[in-house]
Image (cartoon, chains in turn cyan, brown):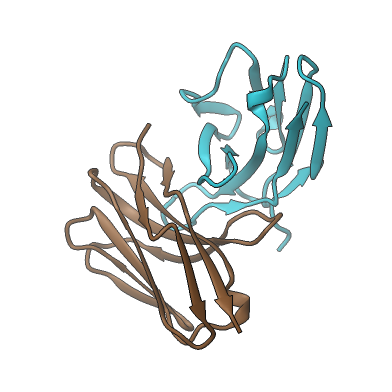
Length: 115
Length: 112
């Protein structure tokens, strides 16, 4: 089966510019996650979707970050405006309802560099 | 936020040696997962543990879910060069359905 697909793989932008990341989860997985991974650290959850509904966005900096998952499949994470501290790898993951029987599967991430 | 204490932070071993790493937490988890991450890629699931005391193997990898539900360890036997990478533990909080908390990672380096 195809894995979680993310694009772009790399993005370099200047601070104050907007940026968007896209994720296509594994087919049939109705739960989608966005994680941020800073250099040398483990991933940290930004937002979790069950179908179209954001059920946990407590860690999402809502002043500049937004996300959507229209139709309950693909998802987009946006940052506007970007700050230097936003440089990190943004990982998307998906799982089927019924976790823990279907652990999270991750994409390869988007590495964001803000200059 | 919630944190797992993963140790050691890094390991430098000779090929063929066994490896052991662990995670501890002040919170109780109902699931422990171990992931491996290679440079430029996302974490890949190695082993999932769902019951306290559970001992599970995947080839040369063995992991255990601690009886107290607050810790887990991962062992790698007879290490080979492709074992190089960063290993992460992740725990699912009982009160946080489907929310995983990750450790800081253990970076494994193998000298041939």
